[in-house]
Length: 302
Image (tube, rainbow, N blue to C red; front, side, top):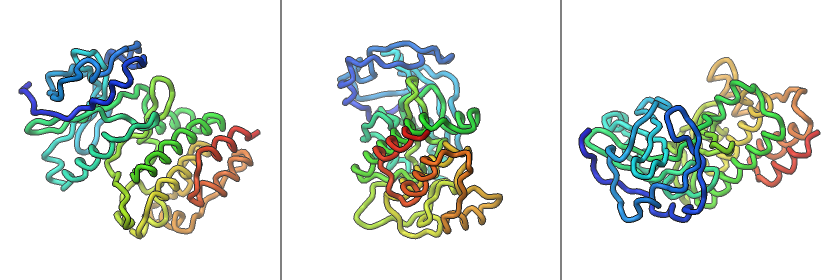
């Protein structure tokens, strides 16, 4: 392949030099312990090209590009390489959105947020070098398990709410929280991904409709102004789905789903423990979710 243009990479990961990272080192997802990160091995080099990577199997396909398993040749460090086509960005007027996604995710440092190590580009494509989470996403796990045990739901909500608290401290709105956008690491920890709809929360509130219908907060559905509470709402919908097996406001049509969201109309099956019912009603759907309350309440469910 042709030599690619310069890139911006993360030089701050040298702080993890003494940490053993468990990742998959082949396209068959065989796990091993690596003592290096990309920036450890190449601390003074701030340029990447596609020639620096071995490309493996496809991890996922999207409307504007694909994600591949990849390995940086010199360090043998395994990453996920997101490839976005410039032509698609231009046709859909998304160049600014991708720039914002890179700017926001690159600067986020939290154990439950997927790392963006850097990016580079050529004439046709933009490449995002991302942390590899080998165990898929929460949606895939829900498809298999149907629901999560309360103890597992507690762990997951603790991690998600902690990550969102961090984002809110950084004035970042994700705006598309859903199980498909939450990945699982080799050590079974959650990693919030896909910051394509994310924005920095300014002093004035946002009014763009975005995200996925089932997880939209009421103020987003009718295109009203909104702030970081919309992410709290999405966490509440996800908690419901963890324990019930489907989104809280799901209906047979999009119109009915919007009505349910607007009226906060949902039912909690009797199979859900009383403690979880109370948590959903009192905390999540009133938009004041704090991870200490979540974990303490859920862990005490009988």
